[in-house]
Image 1 (tube, rainbow, N blue to C red):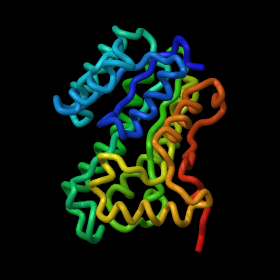
Image 2 (cartoon, rainbow, N blue to C red):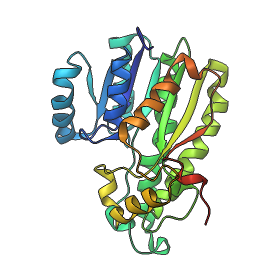
Image 3 (cartoon, rainbow, N blue to C red):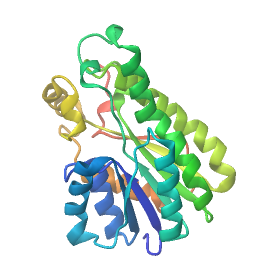
Image 4 (spheres, rainbow, N blue to C red):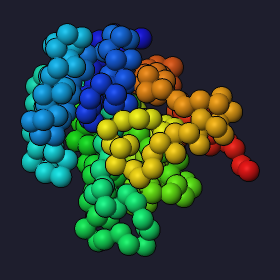
Length: 254
């Protein structure tokens, strides 16, 4: 499905990452992948994961809060691949103290950090990727229901995800003339490294499984499969959308 296609994935932390499950789905479909990581600790994790399954994948250091690293990443990516067909944005961060208590108490620093890393980075990476998408392309980011409704403890990250979803629509409009599609996947709660920062996350998992029509939690690979669909020729008329992959939880009222 993705033979002779090139893509880059931002946000692999460990084997439980949504980004890693997405990488596996894309790789199995025939895509060649590059991985961007932040810091030596995460580099070691990505190296361990890719060593056996995807040994030829370029690993690129990229801290999205540093424009010079973003520029260097895409310069190297252009040299390695020549052309880029898709980008997976699975980056989110807020200081731990901002993911609990009342949103009212969010500090200016925590707010700006969450918005920069979790939302502005999509704009930044899309701008850098677009010139390499000479045959069109697909940009996919990861969001969560906390962008739409209040989720206790999600706080500033919900606000950041709302900005991410709005950015998806505006970027879809800007890049449509270049045949570049931009979509978001709203995944249900999954036990990942970043999820551990959310207070009482185990209760979120249980509640979602209890109330979702499918009466279970979504698995990371199911999210990865939808990302594969969005990067493939099966989704060429879909852009600017937020697709829920949450076992139906978002459709439920009381």
